[in-house]
Length: 477
Image (cartoon, rainbow, N blue to C red; front, side):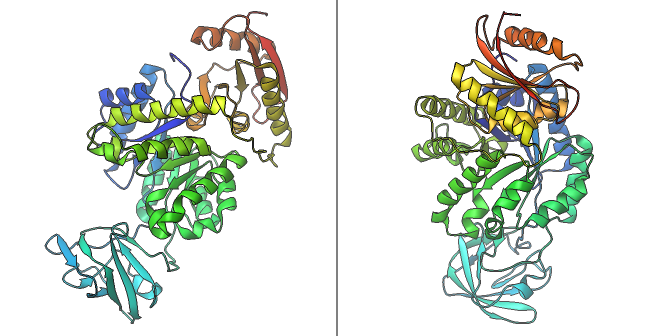
């Protein structure tokens, strides 16, 4: 590893524009720490090929790269449209009918048969991210009668959002279950659950994953109902994604920036990594430079405390994937420089009810690092939990996470300010500081004479046994 990883992590969606080893190497060199496999597109064979390439490039570059699988979720979509597209005019009468027939003329069908039962008169139906809008005027046994309020062209498989309706669709579709099983077998580091509404949705996925898996669960906040259970969802998650695309359709779009800030703050206080996603550099799908508004959007997400910022079509199918990553990296670095000079007001992190002693040790390490102006904080961790507890304090200095576990090593690549280091198992606590100093000097993270803070354990091979914080001067063994 040539240098410390970026503090704000970049998530890049892998697709036709970036699924070769050469292009993946460009992305990782440009600053990508997490690769996203979007199960809404491509086949499992495609994702298997991409995963092999990611692992190979990560190993050759000696850079930890986490892989995030993103489940489709119960997305409601139009069925195929006869002739490819339909033009709807404002004021036009439109019917939604039950069944699998093609959409034609003014009769539409969807992949969700119960839509005609669960949507009521007065509810809105939004198509294609709200570009076309309908209002339900009457609900009948096998159809809904609607009036078009905002016209436009609709085509096959476009998404349907129901912001006013309570839908009873299951959290996991059969496709999701197949994809999740593949993710477990393939050793993916994180799995994102789409269209989460309540904690029971997360429990359903965790039951499918089983207790033995190390795959972390990322909850995607994109439904209005999820906001009613936000604290519980954050507490159940290994990560949170603010999925602004559907969120901006499910609720008034002008409320999304403040909702984003609220989610980010709550996740940060809880010590749960948060990813900001959707349209961050949308114009760079086709242009080599971003808009000023997009650059400001990225900077504001970092100022709010995001752990990671995500690219979707920009890297999956865009014309300038490496330039998009490089632009994110540049914005992140100058914003982080600003934060070092103008640090935000600290927020008191949540003390872990499961590991209050570990939380106290992490807090002591952070306070010591600030008091002595340490070069970095180095954390030995079997599971990564202590590293996350230190990282949630948002120190202005690096946090180095050391672990013997390959999966933990990769998962730490998502966390703000953390540079993971993989080490061989060691059972003698007396040897730990020597090994740590040697690795830090080898990697150029510190120089002789620098003060560092070390968080460790008198039982280094026992998970959850963190019990020691010490100050060490490099070269003073």
